[in-house]
Amino acid sequence: MTETTNTVAFTPERLAKAQEIIARYPEGKQKSALLPLLHLAQEQYGWVSSEVMDYVAGLLSILPIEVYEVASFYTMFHLDPVGTHVIEYCRTGPCCLMGGEDVYGYLKSKLGIDTGETTADGKFTLKEVECLAACGWGPVFQIREKYYMNLTNEKIDEIIDELSKD
Amino acid sequence: MPVKILTEHINVPGINTFEVYRKMGGYTAVEKALKTMTPDAIVEEVKKSGVRGRGGAGFPMGMKWSFLAKPEGVPRYLVCNADESEPGTFKDHYLMKNNPHLLIEGMIVSSFALGANKSFIYVRGELMYVIHILEKAIAEAKAAGFLGKNILGSGYDLELVVQPGGGAYICGEETALLESLEGKRGNPRNKPPFPAVKGLYQCPTVVNNVESIANTPWIVNNGGEAYAALGVGRSTGTKLISVSGHVNKPGVYEIPLGITVEDFIYADEWCGGIRPGHHLKAVVAGGSSVPILPANLILTLANGDKRLMTYESLSDGGFATGTMLGSGGFIVMDETTCIVRNTLTFARFYHHESCGQCSPCREGTGWMDKVLDRIEHGKGNMRDIDLLVDVAKKIEGNTICPLGDAAAWPVSAAIRHFRHEFEWHVTHPHEATKPGAVYRGEMELV
Image (cartoon, rainbow over all chains, first blue to last red; front, side, top):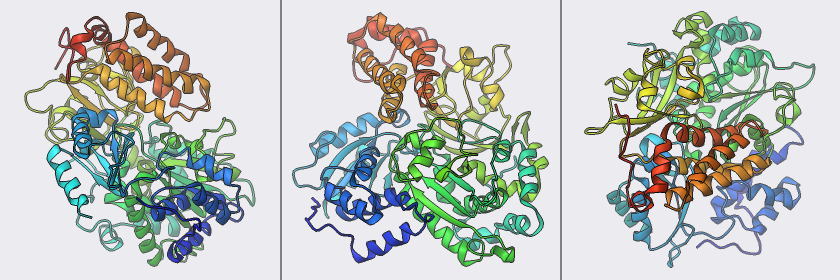
């Protein structure tokens, strides 16, 4: 599981990236950088803690509440600690038509956890998400930036076994 | 072979690189536009083309452009809506990941036409890998002198910014998208003022879908009239249709508007028919928001003519017997599909995605989700079916943005055309809740 410390800060590379992002917007509109910065923070810490949100607020010279209200609105931001691999499984109609629910059932039993839970070893967190815009290649789930498509029980075995080696 | 405006080169190896895209004739529209055309002349061509917004609403793009206010000394913005999140829709995802330069070329000619010097592509956050593809392509175009200061010596400057969303369907609504781009929650704005007058940062703004913008290089190169010559009536040009569900060949197809629905489903060139041993039961033709139609109604109009893949033909008959082209998210269902279960997943989707700003939508989507869940799990009663229709009616037309309508339509249409399946869940709860149970009674299959 990824942990935050009391001294939250971007790595030097990410800080440079953050400055570059902030400079993209017109003068006085730096708040536009909020979503990109939250993504950057989540990439570093795995999730977005209140310390992280306070830090991002500081970078953008906005109030912490302006970050909290945004981070809690968008479902991609994890506001609680998560496992190394967050599996975001599509539960919407078109994936269900392709047997998505059965495959999901298999995934849950393989990991021994239910939606929203993390495995005891901290490796996998399971989340259900809405449509991922890959309906013709369903069932689909996403882990970080990667899409896993046309899922079957056999594919689930391969993917989970591979990621378990990390 | 039908003309392909968007996908002609999509399978050329390396088309995602500047070099190959350029070799295949890419960026000639930028040269033509910046060196030989005025911005107004481009707007005129887009108007003549009759191209309609490809995000789902189908509003004429040239007309939308002509509404853009142009006060002196105030920046104008073009924002590309790449927040593709409508269930069943994955055409923009396909286009951007395979041919990013087409969108970038479209952004350049469109920004020039509108007088924008900073333009944004707002991509749903889940597609972070596509964002990287676009950013790489932008860097290549910039290095080649097609972006940045004084493009091709024309004196025109343009910066393109790719902005990630955060996982919220509502940000596909253009004013919610602008709020999100300003770093806020994606709550749709009250209109008027429309974005054309007060949009991003309260400046005049045009928001266009990926596919709409990707059409503009072809229109610049070939002229609006040539574009309008394709298609049928007010459905000009081609359309990307993303197909999911029970067909032999799901995927993204660029079709000439005007082919028959029957051809589209059964011809080898397109979907290749229903998977072996199965029969067509129903289709959601334009993304989850549009009314579901049973097999006979999607294939045939009330007058017996074949239904066509056009804006007009798909909506023929109104909601009584018709539907909409919408986003082109074409979801095909065979006889193994439980309509109640499918409707429940859609209702759950809208409940999850409602921004919560308007009470009819916030409360209504929750009610529909709850009541459908009850029916699906054998705990509903007959009054629940009418309750669903009633709730849907009370959401429709009573919200700031179209999400309310989008949530109401699939529920009311499912009950309109498949009421017997809902009733069967109520009268046969034991049977209906068995794994994989599907109503097998009176049902018209094709």
